[in-house]
Image (cartoon, rainbow, N blue to C red; front, side, top):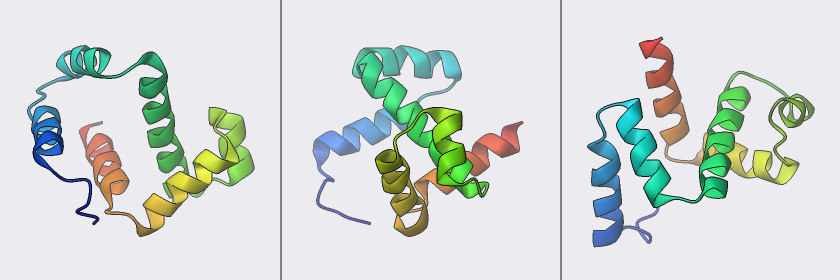
Length: 97
């Protein structure tokens, strides 16, 4: 994992996210910290990662999410070679259902 982006401010952001207790609190925090476009982009990337991990093709993902092939490619890079953040979070979500 790249250490270049880690500093006191990103530590504070990660601690804030880790302290969130439920969906309502998460909604309130995200609404205050990000723009509508940023929120939608992050949600779309998470869905793209989920679909990639479930073996869907690029055309299927484009049709299902409206994501560009550039976004899908970028997410796929992190799904395959990243820090496993997408996989870990999606597995936690699945285990709660």
